[in-house]
Amino acid sequence: MKVWSHREIRETFLEYFANHGHLVIGSSSLIPVADPTLLLINSGMAPLKPFFTGEKNPPSKRLCNIQKCVRTNDIEKVGDRHHLTFFEMMGNWSIGDYFKREAINWAWEFLTDKKWLGIAADRLSVTVYK
Image (cartoon, rainbow, N blue to C red; front, side, top):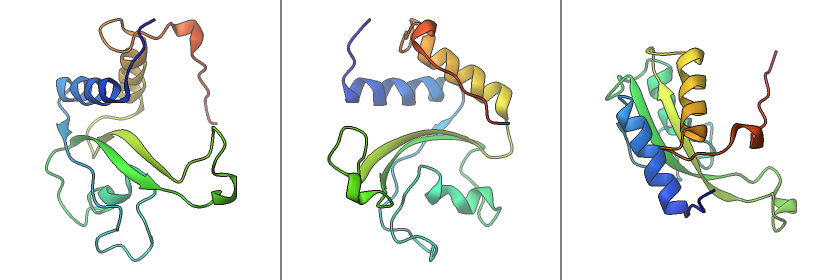
């Protein structure tokens, strides 16, 4: 299996979803704009909330981004291999366009197809929330 740099993963993710009709948008500021509910941006969708709520019209019904995020809810555990305060969240977003079927199929293709990440299916674990 190929060893990927973080830059290659980022570029490949954005290319994949652009090829599936998504508009690539840049990361928003870590300081929320006009959102008094957050001190810092803590998820990929946080800056997109005005689009999901209908407050603003999105530039496209399909968006993808790699959003800079900060989370402090487990700050006392930061320093091990599993807890971070800063990370970048990759996201593909549908605002009134597609739903679970397409999202799941595209995620699987991106992860497993040799043209993209090419991870062997038997090395992945899938969970379903009911």
